[in-house]
Image (cartoon, rainbow, N blue to C red; front, side, top):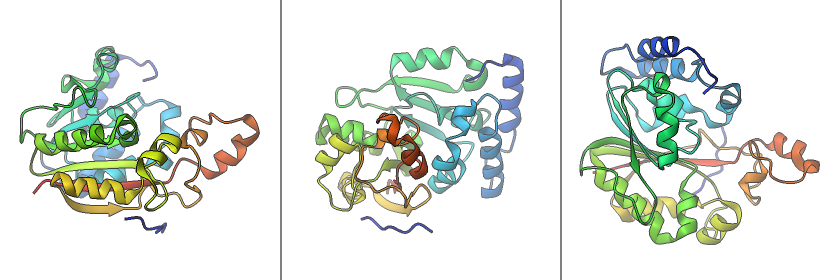
Length: 269
């Protein structure tokens, strides 16, 4: 399904701990307005680098996480956090009342242990390397699983690897739990494996079908992270922030901005 609707700088540990405590100091169960305010404080935090903040206008972290339905008392699992762009927002947000589990590599565990002031005591890391390692925790133990611009990496390994990730997310979620997905979008009904390997994009209909086959119901589709300037026929790494192509095209790529992205909310019945 595809619609073209477009409508860690180094700071004092004590300062960061105080900031994280302020962000997470609300009541365990917050309404939407209070949750949005807590998320904005995390996004505005001075532990986030200028380079990371520059991506906010393309990645819309507050609106995206609100669309997924996040709350500060949840147990949230982030898959393949990469450089920790969303982790720097999720960890302070969940600091007081929630739990954050990072499904990543030992290298990422070293990163978060090196900055406990930002990531706090709530962050745990589980080894995650599909299709060999996909277990995320005890069945029915998490409120939310999120993944940002990663599903093509698993599809590039094999369709079975991506299917295993979806199944693992389904198994670890409580009934009513949410699997939130953002991904670089390919043209509708494109060959998923081919577009994933060549362009690092997946057709929206492919991921929705996979979610339904896994047992999820589709809780929502959002155009929060859509970009009508993206022609969807170029490798996403040519676009910001990577700009891997020749310098002669960088100005044109910057004018396009980051990739056109689907934002999907799957719910476990």
